[in-house]
Image: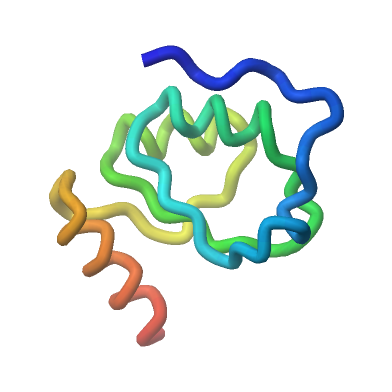
Length: 84
């Protein structure tokens, strides 16, 4: 897939009302940082190791990674992290 192009200006995360972000591919991580200005804290969940690596390479702090690359895996990661 192709990541979203660079937005000028980027949308402030605070205007989107999101406090959790799910990234399901390395290109999604790239597109996210190209489109969104992280002006508020956010929990970032990834679908697997390659997406986690891409997100971290873009300067994102990953909250948790799914143990299996599926919707269920992401939901489990979110539930596990929010229980801490």
